Length: 275
Length: 242
Image (cartoon, rainbow over all chains, first blue to last red):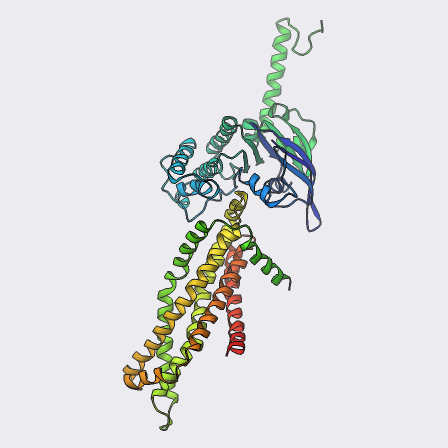
């Protein structure tokens, strides 16, 4: 579990994060949702320690990450896996070497153990036959899969994903989302995902934090998000005509359902008299 | 002054919480191949022709019949050891190695590969930059020795082929009034130049911000700044050590 408390960050006097607090639970996919430039990626970078927040604290399973000794920070960092927006695979290494890299650097595993683990991770993400290929020879979706395999290879407890399905076709994007979701449940990982993709929200959003202009405006699950009353979030969700249409269909189906219930002589749901 | 301060802080991060000796050793060998072995051909071509041209030009200027022709060999040796081999080789390497280091690190920065290392808890500066500096410190003196040898050989071949002086006269000139300290001086200079080129290029590449355009700009800046630093250091070394 990761806890963030009152995270504040400014760049050249401009406030980017304005006191964000929240809890990211393990075994859940926690989404940081918002439009571009709302501070999602900055918040993620603060949480993983790439940027130092001006104020606030970050705790990993009770261990304070911010303002702590370098050794303890390193200890926490070695349990972190991250999937970057552009995958950030090492150009000079092939797929296998990329996945093996954190094992070689962070664990005392023998060569044989590392080979087995790499094989397992590549198989888990469906890339068992791509091990010898260079990053330049594989597609964007495959790069993301390799990035995920590298992130989970050292048995990471925390998985961070910065826009994992950006630049991917809808089908591949869904597959990547599903993979992250499955891994989160399978290994009880604390997963934090930065996204502005409503498909991801509806597919895998266990816990969603909506950011707007550096402020947290809303938090909840994917079941509740469509009924939100927060105007900024409503504007964000229904920006696309697809979501507006989905909402309209949902409302019409709801009305029809209500109508048929009345016609059948039954009371509509939710209006049953209390006993 | 601000940049100098940042540069010194950057150098400090290289030696703080570094990776294990085994990793550092393996990375240094990889970098030594890239920096050293891959630069042998260009260094060989440049130094051979510089030696040849020096010999021909001294011969052209040496018209006084009272000065023995063996002086040409002596002057080629002195110019090669004291200045041409260490300085010209370093300037060539600033172009080849410096741009390579800055471009490579800059690309790693903008494609988040350096961030990926940091997130894993690896000191990216130490992992990426320290082996480049150590490899440069090891390989530059070797390349300078190669350059010295080939430059003197180039002078020998050019002198003989052009008829400016006989092979015997050239060798006689090479052997006259030899001061071994000059070799030490050249090697000290090559160490200094190696450090300046590799560290300046690494600093500029590592701190690249933006996109592909900025990587190119960092690469160019690395070459120009390294050459300026080499020329200043060349003067300081000559003033202090000779």
